[in-house]
Amino acid sequence: MQAGRQMLERTAVCRAALYLLAAGVALTSEARWSCPPSCRCNSAALEVNCSGGQFTNVPDGLPREAKLLNLTHNTIKTLVHQQFHTLMQLLHLDLSDNLLVVIEVEAFLGLQGLLTLRLSHNQLKIIPVGAFAGLTNLQLLDISSNEILVLLDFTFSDLAALQFITAADNDLVFISHQTFTGLNSLQELQLDGCNLTAVPTEALTQLSALKTLHFQRLGLATLPNYSFRHLMHLKELVISHCAWLETLSGNSLFGLNLTSLTIKHCNLSAVPYIPLHHLVYLLYLDLSFNPITYIHGNLLGDLLRLQEFHLVGGSLLRIEIGAFRGLEHFRLLNVSRNLLTTLESGAFHSVDSLRALGLDSNPLACDCRLLWVVRRRLYVNFGGRPPACTTSAQLQDWNFLDFSEAELPSLLTCRQPRILNRKRQEARVDQGHTVVFYCSAEGDPVPSVSWLNPQLRPLSPIGRVRALSNGSLEVRYAQPQDSGTYLCVASNAAGNDSLPVSLRVRTFPSSSKNPFRLKGWPTFPSASPGENGDQKLHFDVKTLLIAATIGFVSFFSSVSVCFIFMLFWSKSKGQIKHTATIAYVPRSAVSSSNGGTGNYMETSRFTMKLI
Image 1 (cartoon, helix red, strand yellow):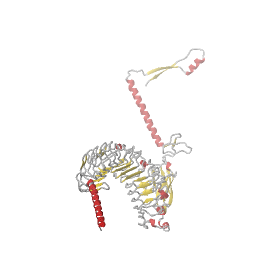
Image 2: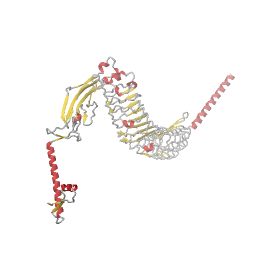
Image 3: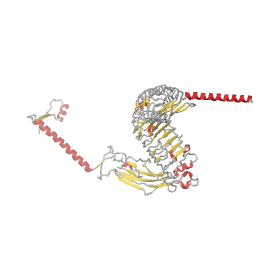
């Protein structure tokens, strides 16, 4: 019994000692991590969370060993000089969602190890030079959702290790040329300023290592030439929510070797083919939410490595045949929420390489042009939003990917074009008249009508001889060289139909039965070559008589003026002899004298009276 009692006493003593030791350790840790009121501290993770603590200033008594400090959702207005100098171990500082208006110079001095600093959703209007002094290891800076108007020279010069800046959702009106000086390691920059009317090209030239650049809400109508010069390492460019941006100048992207380009929520009415053509390393192109109506054929072939093309929420009416020709690596096309009635397989270099297709929310007509989509449904990802028929009465709102192979031949059909009026059209007109030939066709889908000239070359909708939008052919001010047979061609996915029309143009008619024909004269545009190649010019007799009369009258008028002038001139010289004696030797006398031996030569005289 005695031995047992002693054993119990020893056990109790040991338990008491262990309890006191544990309590002592807890008290020591608590003393070291004395949390300010309204804050929550985690000594194991070295975190201090003062979010939503209704602080108007940075609280005192923060643990010196803290590595993360969260001061979000308070009413702090000012950061004073060396505000956090006691927190030398701090790695992450978050001051988002406060009322910050002033950050004094060297406010963060002493935080040499700080890696991330977040100042978003405050009321900063300007950041003084030197505010970030001492943050030599900072890698991420977030100053988004403030009221910053101007970024001054050398604002970030102390942040040599900075890799990421976001300044989105501000009111920037000006970025000084030396703003980004010293940011030699910056990899990504996000800028937002609805009042910026120009790309800060000079400021961006300081960012030689930049790889990603985001622009939002710029007040630009066009993107000027050489906007991003010297950004040779830039790989991703995003321009968004620029409501006035309508065009890109031809060399606006010159000097860039992009792999990703996004221009969305802007006002582009056409794909910027010329600025894009040199981007041979481009893999990703997004032009969504622009009022682009057409993707034309054979204009994107220079983008040899392009894999993805996005144009969601646009105004696309048509993707032409050959639109993506030459793009051997093309994998994804997303044209959801547009106005497309079809998408033909001929638009692609090869449909076999296509892996993803967004075609939903388009007024698709289910006919033979979409047969290829159904047959590749097992190999193409539609993102859970398969296309549906909306303009076909028979298949209204049907998901045509559900059709069986047996149903396809009878459901997805096309009808070959047929020109309605097959009557041969012939026109014989005089030179200078205007001629119109009509051609209309029917088919399913509605066929397109084009015209070929006598040399079988397509006619454009502009010029003197042109194909009109209603399918007609117009020849204005017809000339003899316009004569020949023109061909109307109606075509759709099921085939084509054609109809020839004939035009003969006569030269200007002559009013005389026997006109003059002058050989060797140059031919006027209205003249036609002669049978033997001689150039002939036709004259009307009446016209010739009028011209001759005008010429004679002009000649006699000139002679009369000369005589009148001589008369007055002679009167001004006083008395002048009106007779003159002229001596001459007859020709016969000269001949006799040369042949004879004598020296006699007879001279004759006569008198002439001046009138």
